[in-house]
Image 1 (cartoon, helix red, strand yellow):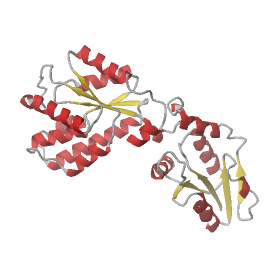
Image 2 (cartoon, one colour):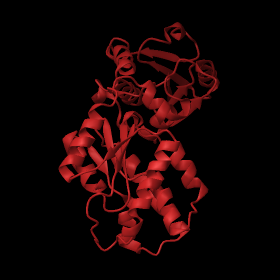
Image 3 (cartoon, one colour):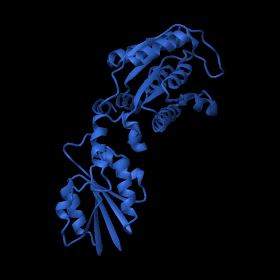
Image 4 (cartoon, one colour):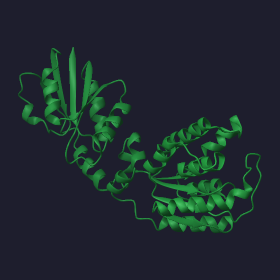
Length: 321
């Protein structure tokens, strides 16, 4: 049996890595990929391990917290009769004459991989198509639309996605209530909050660098306060503090309230607006007030987004995810 090994940091995971892994698996019976910890890695190790493991779920993927030294020791201790180390960039050329395994370098065939890694770290957005799909959600600039009911969030989310050539996240609470009704319990709110996060992360896989989110969990928190007399589940607080957005668009309730069969809190619109504004300001979250007619709202939102810092480096997105 031929046992193959690949060592790397996979920071960021890109199509060069994909070519190396697919070529290696065709040359051996089993393949182990070792994701190594490295002090200069931009992305946390657990995230890089997730990328590799979920991109190749049928392969054995190991997270080596001890770095390359631990990976080499594990490879040396493996009981396979024939061991092959596949090297895409020639990093492990010093091990080429080891008696314990065969060394295969594809440096000549993988000439674009090294420069590609450097280019992605410097400007992943200019090289977006070279990123593997699971990597992109980490770098997507997420913009949340918040506000009380019937304030144009859904309309604005769709129009902004169209304007910026990307996708948007629909409000999961509406989908849930259409199926199960409006008589909500704490458990229903847990389902709604979890569903909103799940839907957001699924749409982030399809996003073109920006993602517009019709509602997020601060809104879920405030809705819980409406339903349960000021009370909200602790994990919803935790989740909406952990999740980060590049900007918030706070929609004012200055357009007519429309009863669509699910809305029933017309009188609470002003209170909810002020409550959301209070949360954004006390947490010092960046937001723009969106008001006026539908056309005015769209123009104000587009202008606010165009004023955001240019998508360029990876660090701000990593730190705010």
